Length: 234
Image (cartoon, rainbow, N blue to C red):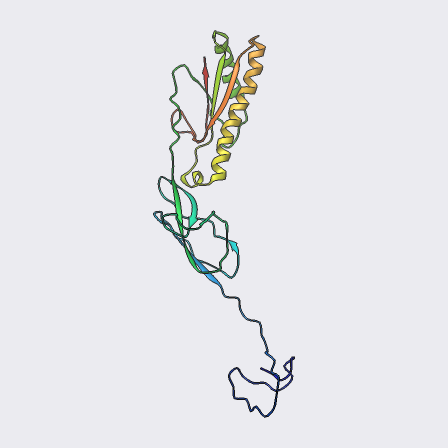
């Protein structure tokens, strides 16, 4: 306390004795204090790994998840182990208004099994890792495919493109997994574009080409870290 607003008068400690010799106004004197911080603890909740606690004094993004669980994909954080509490996205903003424990929530992976390759199917590949560019060798395969189509009486072509083989950590990354699906689709589209030109050159018209993509890499011998486009003629 102080007898002057700017603290230039007589000071008194909080709770100190005061003489009360006359009426006096005391002014509170203030100093900047530290904003209390709060701690968030991350638990794997069935997964494995370690994450350091995060200490903040206000709203801030959560530390990116670093746990893993075999056969599962990280989904979100929750204040309850069974997911019945408040949920927060990976890297989402947390208020840090109180200390808390966040439990990893997991989604069981659904295996995407490549469709069985029939004897009548044709594979175009392998593509270079991370690319959908047609090499001269791939173009030659597509030319042979067009010749096969010429001998067919049906007019349906189905192209199934696969992305590259991903590691377990990469599969858990949603953006990488989505990009890998798109890579498979781009490969199928590259084959379709070149194939259309070859069919036209052979005077073939009326063929319908459908394109799809799978998120898993595929290789006929299991030794390639790159994928193929599987072609079904019917």
